[in-house]
Image (cartoon, rainbow, N blue to C red; front, side, top):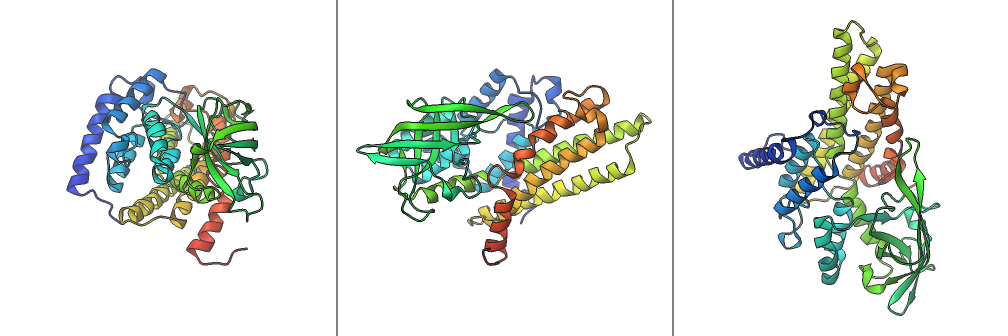
Length: 393
């Protein structure tokens, strides 16, 4: 594993930083100078203009082939780009693009690639993921949403839940059961569904922070053309695992945690300078979180090193995901400890403003971190069986 850039990567990093300074940081509001992962939504026009510039360079999906609108970047070039964008707090991609896009690229037909990939890059369509069901979350292969073949169409009935962004989505990529008699990991197919199709109902799920991210989605005799199936019929589980592999491995989580801990350290120093020092136990807690964010970054480096050698991270990606999501919850808890009763406020003012969003809001928002993209329990199972060679329970 290399910790220093090669001369070529150093030059590439400088190019990315210059681009970010010129097109993202220049003219940014003052409050954006110290980016918080939980800040208020950024100006939509500014974000759109920035993403359009990334797309022009092929940087919005840098690892994609140029013929699909990417930049044919190497794994390490893509990693450097991601590092620098997240360090600057700049948006990096369209919603779901890096999940469904590579899946269609690897398993889709040429017609599906031509229809869906260019509008994704241009931000003309929004996607959502239809995997989890009320009785099938961690045990996703037990899903029951059914698709019955009727000529050139499937008729879909069932329900999906915890569907992020379904209320704004134009399309859904979803897993359905097409052979109820097959073993549960078989008999599943991967479909692309137009969310404007008759028979689809989206119902909001409001989280404890009073935010609307998740939804329930109901399907009642929804007709989906067979040409919208990705991969072979009844082999969709293996297509779906491709999507999950892209979801579990990134550097963003580590950088987000580190920047949050840096904010807490500034808060602690500010309290001390003002004659209101934070109790020693909580200062030590911040130090622990700082060490843990460094570990989180190292786990990301392990994943990218494997990819750079042409390997496919498996249990390493699970380690990175599990550690990072649990760390985000520990960071939020430490912020609650630092701010005491003030932390219960929905908005911070005064000395606490340096922390960005309030501790209470952050604490509530990170609750799903250890559930989304595979629970910590599932990640531990993967680490145990595929990494340590332990028998399945």
